[in-house]
Length: 250
Image 1: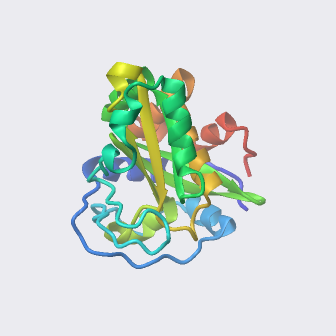
Image 2: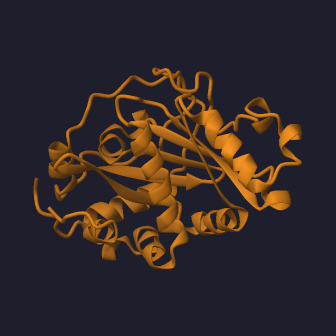
């Protein structure tokens, strides 16, 4: 795997095009992807030029090709009352609601988590100005790079290589939804993740990704890297993300 070098031109192109084009969710199904090895990902990541111009992200109104969350539509939030009985939870304390939520998702092919409403509002505020980021996902002796868009109440993840190479054909590997029904009464926001392509991400990787993405938006020091990626990409260095995550710079 190649050593991380200055890639400001790549990040500038990614950030610039991403700011112009939001996700859209009206097209039909997407084809499945082939697996991209960490070594190949790293090699392409450090090429001086992108393989193609970034175009508008295509629709995420895909037909699922895995056993996860059949029928889930990322930007049409699945109603919370279709997942749990809200009325029965209203009299429970936040810890109990969180426990029920987490238990519900165990073994169901989804990721269940929660956060304080105050932290969600901070995430929401920061995502309005800095919608995009890149996160390395470590596998074996290398990493693949995930491209993240935070468009509350959703967070979406796909492989950077697929985003670079496929443009309008790119589809998310993983979608996350935030439920704010208990934000005011319980200071609690429930989080549900759905792995779209099981061949791309495991449940444990998906859980790590959402936790890590939140840490970059909620931690003041880490958030400076998010700001740099979105607002001053010429100064963004991917190795700073690796350092923040205590990953080796290859």
